[in-house]
Length: 308
Image (cartoon, rainbow, N blue to C red; front, side):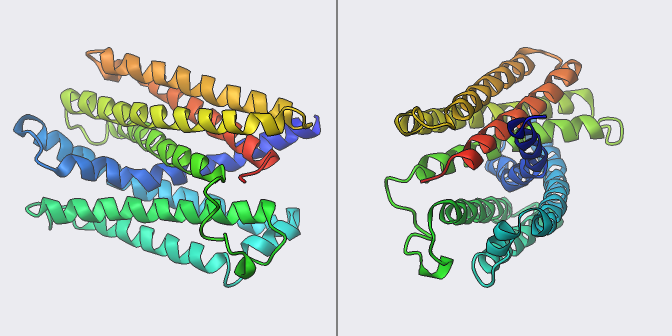
């Protein structure tokens, strides 16, 4: 097995908890947005969808924390220099831990008060939106810290651009791409969770057809933004990459990212057009796998190149 093949395999493995982290970040928003003035004919559907996806958020978040936490522990033996940075106190570990605590607390509250705030939808929705915004802020911190780790020889506390990359940094293109992928994974994870709960929570075929299509819509909405941002970043970086040894990894990584998302989008489009979305379970599982492949390819590009 070549070094690049091994590195790609490890990247794909690391991206499993990353996918769940991205899903957990956006899942509260995908249900909170549906709480505003829902039409009467789908009000019950939206309420059940929100309850199920908010539970899915907690499950995804737990998987992500366990996976990434285990990865951080393994990093100490596999890459001591990297572990020394990421586990450094107070920077960058303190802001990351504090951000994680805030978004986890809001997500738990959002799910826990579902029945208590049933008549106060604006407040309940605000909690869900705040949970996602705090999770996305945590993602922003991670991107800025990763940029420092790759590009700067300074200590984190000495870096003037630690929390605010320069305006010409590619991080400003990759960050929105990551946020859009968060919507992609939220919608895709929600569809898989609904398929899993179909026989345990028998809310009727009409509801599950509605829920699977709603998750697919969120995923398609995220794909458009992710492709646009990633394509812009690729065009901007190509002049710097084309004469470097990393060029093949960059080119094929971006190609896999775009092709995988395009194929996933086609599958979600087929689900939306089908009158009985429950018959297309394989399409939804395949779309999730393609999304994971796209994230793995993009992570491979970023780890082999840089964010500046």
